[in-house]
Image (cartoon, rainbow, N blue to C red; front, side, top):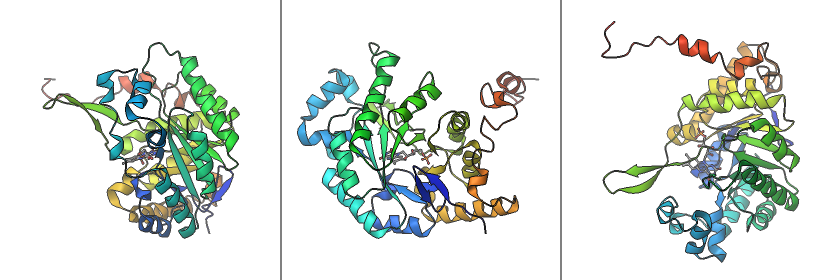
Amino acid sequence: MTDLSTGYLGMRLRNPLVVSASPLSDRLETLRQLEACGAGAVVMRSLFEEQIEHESFDLHELLEQWTGGNFEAQDFFPAIADYKTGPATYLESIEAAKRELSIPVIGSLNGVTTSGWTHYARLIQEAGADALELNIYLVAANADDTAATVEERYISLVAAVRDTLSIPLAVKIGPYFSALPDMSRRLVAAGADGLVLFNRFVQPDIDLETLTVVPRVRLSTPAELTLPLRWIAILRGQVQTSLAATTGIHSAEDVLKVLLAGADVAMMASTLLLHGPDRLSQVHSDITRWLVEHEYESVEQLKGSLSQAACPDPAEFERAHYMKALVSYSGAVPGVRS
Ligand SMILES: Cc1cc2nc3c(=O)[nH]c(=O)nc-3n(C[C@H](O)[C@H](O)[C@H](O)COP(=O)(O)O)c2cc1C
């Protein structure tokens, strides 16, 4: 019998399939279904900084603080009223999930400043969450901010939240750092028990009819997997921490790839939103079959066996035979005569 269990954030999960933070956690019934379909753990949708701040700040004050009063930039921020739940409802949803589920329930906070966060991190812990995921959604858009200033903001935020918690802390970050391995080590030194790679930023778009800036939430495609795959492989041997892969994991093949690269868990949102909880049963049975066919006794045995540190040619994950790959491209160009 293949042992699918995996260590993540100091917890032992029954398998590496984790439901990523998304509306999938909004209904208890969906959570029950996801557990029945084989989820190893679930990350609740985030409690957003805007929801916390709304309790104590005026919205305009908040936008002023974030955008420096830039009116056009304010179009990028959705109205507070659009958010479905406030902090109290959020905490209740964690309590309910904990009561109903036997798999670990991970709470999530999403924002950029420390105000209110430490308080709510503690309340999420008190509500029974097994761990907290801190989604630092910080777009470094101000030319006066240096890389060092921005990075220090991350570090102090993680250290402040770590100080208030006794449960494990995961930090979800984006890929846009000049020196990700160094930044990862510093986040771990500041108190992160794990890194979730990568946050998928919602990119604003422009509506040509209304001439307004509109947010566009698009679900991911499997083509997006290669970015977290590469960085997990690079970080695995260099940073001693739990690693979760998120973005572009749609199938058992994708799960197996991130595990081989060195992830401890594979998080999924888009594929479950597209196909429903049954998708998880399919992925579960497909990874089990693959492991048996390839004579693996456990997921632990598989984890990291193709990370950069384990790879005979470490350059595969760096320039990835960049020049050779580009030169060998031979797709025909429509409209061009040969
Ligand atoms: C509709 C939607 C809502 C999401 N809400 C959150 C959230 O509240 N907090 C968070 O950290 N990530 C959130 N995410 C990001 C997902 O957790 C995940 O990291 C991202 O979608 C990439 O994974 P995927 O390719 O499996 O979709 C959301 C994604 C979607 C599509």
